[in-house]
Length: 144
Image (cartoon, rainbow, N blue to C red):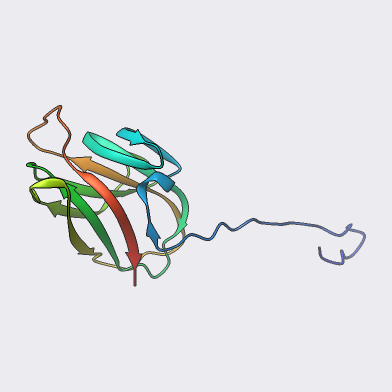
């Protein structure tokens, strides 16, 4: 609240900031589609499945790391800003790990640092356009 001035009443404003751990479990996404859910975790995801995190402060973020498992499919994990049709800021390739629970880690370094808050979409893409499950994301982590 300010003190007001020249006949203007004091103005009040507030903002709630939600802090997140930089390592995020997909189940903590604000929205998701195309991914099976089992209790407090996700199962594998299909082509065009996505997760959305709202109002992520991307200031200084330079890389994203994914922990995943894929039985026998390869594909890409796209990171888009603002919408499913928004610009792709990272495209990370993954390969089969031999099983859903056989975890591997891939990291993508962004070309340029970002700033400000954005809605972040993590989109699963398989160019074979299969209708079968493609990948299981265990976690993703934003890094500097």
